[in-house]
Image 1 (cartoon, rainbow, N blue to C red):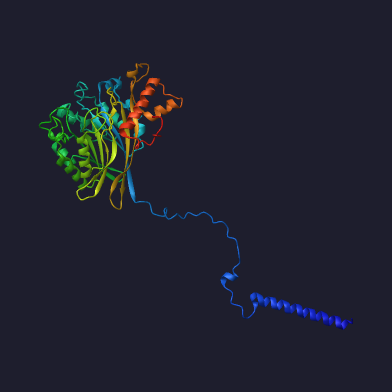
Image 2: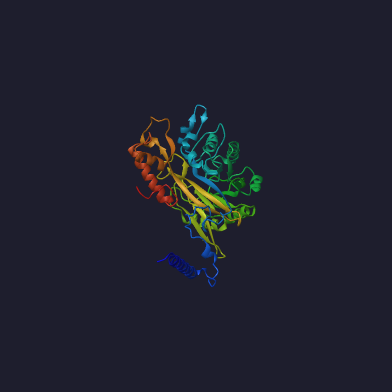
Length: 439
C-alpha cells in the first residue's frame, strides 16, 4: 500500500470517529432540540453535612412561659407552752426557747414567709408562769419564735384570754417588739376596725390576707372587750358550734375587695386529741372555701389531721378549690398524749397569673417532724431534753449506720411509728421524701 492510500484511510478513520462522537453528544441532549436545562439539572449533586443542633425550640417549648409570680409560705403548727418547755429554756440570763425549735429553722428557711400559732398568753414580768388550765408564759417566747425564722403569729387560739385583756395587750406589744406580725387579737376597737380583722402581706408580688378565728376561749369570757378577740362562735363559752358565718364570710369578702390575691385562714376548732376532723370542721371548711378562702390551717386538736385539696360547687354551678389542713398538731409542746409529739412543716406555693389575676395553691408538701423527749427514755446525760427533729433525717441516719448521739433502739422504733402515723393522718401524697417502702 502506497503512502497516499495510507493517508486517505487515516483521514477516513478520523472522520468516522468524529461522526460517532457527534451522534453520542446529540443523544445525550446536547443538540438543538434538547429541552432547556433546569436548575435541578444543573445543580451539583452533594452530600449535606449533618445538621448542627440549634436553639430553636420544639412547638411545645416555643410557648412563652406563663406570666406569673409565686410566693412560698412555710406553716408551723401550735406552740403550746407547757411548763416543761419553760424549764428547758431557763438560762442564767432568762429564757431562750430557740434551741427547742431544733430543725424548724432549717425547714422554714427556704420559704419566702413563715407563720405559726401561739397557744398561750404573755402576762408580763412579775407574773406567775403557768400552763394548763391557764397558759401564761415568759415574754422570751416571742423573740425565740422570731429567731427561729417565723414572720407572723396567729393569736386567735383557745388560750388567747388566759391573762385577760391586759394579757392580750401585752402579748401584742411583745410580738411587735420582736418584729413579728400577728393576726387574731386587738388592743382596741379602732385597731380591729382599721385592720379589717386581717393582716395583709405582700409576698413576692402576691398579696396575702391572713385571717384567724377561734371557736372557744378556754371558758374565759371576753365580756366588755369582745373586739379584742376574733371569735367565730356565738356560743364560745359553751360548745363552740354556733358559727357566725356572716362574720367570716364578710371578712373574706372585705379582704378580696381590698385587693387580696389570696386569703389564708387560721382556724382554732375541732375535738382535742381527735385525728380526724369532725362534721363541723368539714362543714366550715366547705363554707370558707366557697366564700373565697384559698388556704385553711387548723389548730387546737393537738394532733395531726388530714390535709387535702378541697373542691366545692358554688351556686352558679362553678367549682372553687382551696387547700385545707384540718390540724397540723403541735409545733412545740411537751404533751404526752398519743400523737401530740407528731407534726410537720407545711410548705405552700401560691402562684398568681398576672394576666388573669387569678391566684392558686400550685404546690403543697410537708416534712414530718417529731418532738424528741428524752425524759420519756430516762436519758439525763445530755444538755437538753426537748428538741424538734426531722423524722426522715433521723430514721435515715440510723438506717445508714450513723445514728444521732441520743438515739437508742427504742427511740428509733418510736420514730418509725411516728412517721407511719404522720403518713396515716396527713397522707403520703404531700410528703415528697416518702418512697412508699419501709412502713
